[in-house]
Length: 266
Image 1 (tube, rainbow, N blue to C red):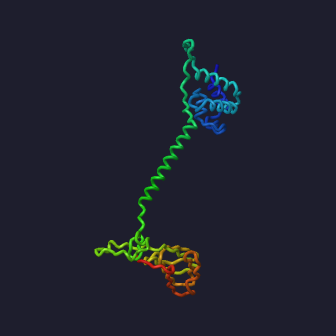
Image 2 (image 1 turned 90 degrees about the horizontal axis):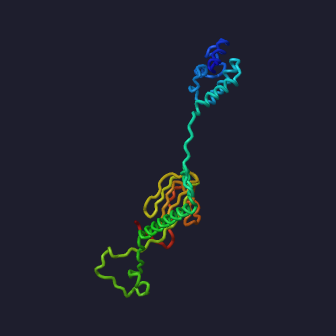
Image 3 (image 1 turned 135 degrees about the vertical axis):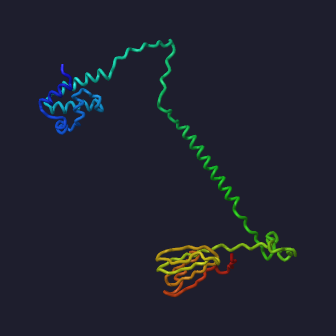
């Protein structure tokens, strides 16, 4: 009885076509067609491809593909499933059951364990936040002592400042500096392009050109603004509208300080 490859080769020779011509017609590589005729099916990737190639090649050569495919399946089944002798059965002791086979799946994490882990994380975060807040509080600078008419705070609170006499050996280092008044806020907005210089408590904080609609904010006790165009700059001092700093094109120098306050240079 002819093999699958012999039947294919005989049909191709009767048709008088080469592997290249058959490959162009069936869209199957010529080396696969040669493997089919040589019964070398293991050179093709998978049995499902072999069945498909057999059907297409047999129909092209004018053969019935079913007997060829059935013959291949029988041959493939015999080679792929060798006979194995049955394994002897092991007798289990009466009253005892064999332990279940180990499971390859990882054990599921219980919800209680997840809640416990989250609780530990929250506690750790709260402790870190508390320690950080305590550290920042301890590093805050101490507030200066209030002095009234040269008398300590304890004497000034009693209202008897005249009874206090400072020691004759007092040095400048022992004199307590009065506290600075609270800072005030100045907000400026450029309605047109203008050059601006802002000095806060004797220190230049900004010097440059402000484009239209740019807004800048400064905090300090005494704020001085210099501009090349007073009509291009709008000001708000402590959220109170101060209007334009001057007329259009005028060079303006304006100082902002709360009335009744004094200023100590740095």
